[in-house]
Length: 106
Image 1 (tube, one colour):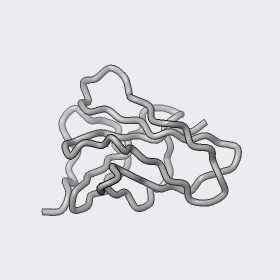
Image 2 (cartoon, helix red, strand yellow):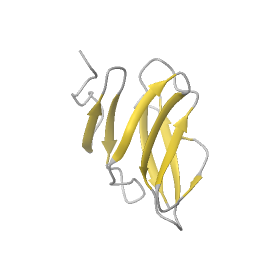
Image 3 (spheres, rainbow, N blue to C red):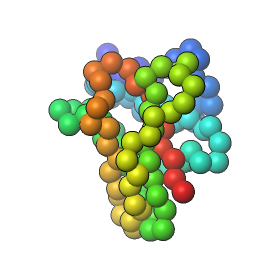
Image 4 (cartoon, rainbow, N blue to C red):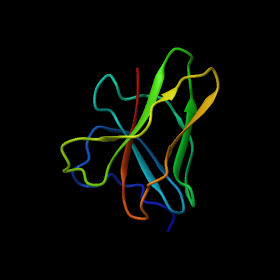
C-alpha cells in the first residue's frame, strides 16, 4: 500500500492530503500563518524530507514539524527567503518514522 490517505486521530483542520510510497502529508489549517498553497513534489529520501512550493518575492517561508501531535509546540527549521519561482524546504533530520509538517510564511 502506498502512503496513508486517512487523517490520523488527534489531527484536525486538515485541508489537503498527499501520500506516496514512503510518506503521507496532511496540510493543516491552523490559522492565518499556515499556508494554503499546493505543495509540489514531497519526497523522503537519503537527504531527509523535502517539499517545494511556489514562492513569492518579499515573503519568508519556514517548514515546521512535530513528531507527535500531543507536543505543545512546532519545531522550526531554517527560514527560506521567497523568490518568484518554486522554492524547496528541507528537513535533513527527518526520521524514518512518522513526522507531521506544516509550512508558514510571512
